Image 1 (cartoon, rainbow, N blue to C red):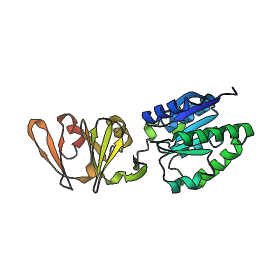
Image 2 (cartoon, rainbow, N blue to C red):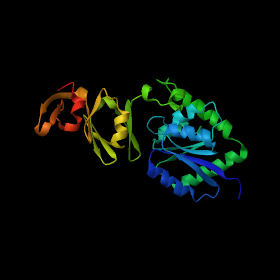
Image 3 (cartoon, rainbow, N blue to C red):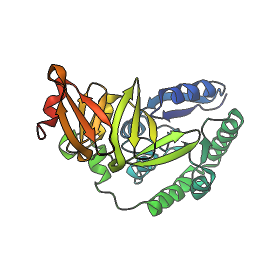
Image 4 (cartoon, rainbow, N blue to C red):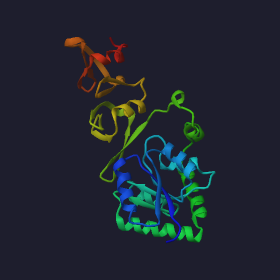
Length: 270
């Protein structure tokens, strides 16, 4: 057996990570040395472990897959295989620049083809040239960031320099819907899923209420119940209910109960 290909897996979906790990067990030369659940963690682990190969999800909260590449652009990159739910047209934009891509759900035959390609790149020392093309492409696709990547990925806490979400990318059956945060009227929790209610549709996002609360600007979105967040810009009226509770009415006519424990969130209206 030849040299092991040290490998890092990056995906914000635990089931996707588990599934990829199981599939990669069929390849004797693939050695999974670490996993990461988000882009910031991925940057740190790539720097710490220097893997030969990284399976990198593109759509992640905070730093996405492209941001990870940009953050490491001035360093020696591992071979990158994107795992993505992007459609064919988006894939074509970087297909010739990335080492390879895998469309979710990952097909075993495509995974085998990708591993064969990686082996060839390693044996022919092609990875450096390929990664240079990848970095160039991603930089050309990007608009100037609102915050320097060096500020995002350093070890200091970013609590005082928090960047809240401007949109959510909702994956559904291989398609991605971009939901503008300003268009979200209210959110309610269903287990580890969030129901994002907009004017025209309800979108389902896999996320916890705790994390959702952190991702949204608290000057606009207030948690008014253990399982409910509202866009306060869309509140039309508020009236008292029994037991110290309140009912708020959004401008779309939706009535939502305010828990007594969360009354302070609406002090500007009471």
